[in-house]
Length: 68
Image (tube, rainbow, N blue to C red; front, side, top):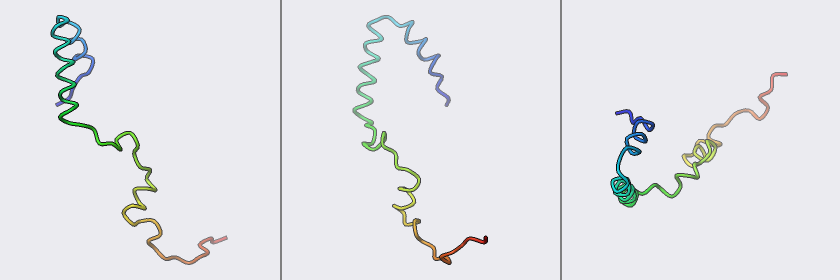
């Protein structure tokens, strides 16, 4: 299901003020019921993710890989 934010916003604007307030209350209730993970805003870098699962430094190669 694709949610069209612009269409939802337009629908909300057409509701009476009392209904808009009820909708805001409902949204707050949903936020409490389905909280976002704490690290949602602080996503790890690719390096951190690889390091976490043990992919950093996992292979042995010759020290000098340069061909020039």
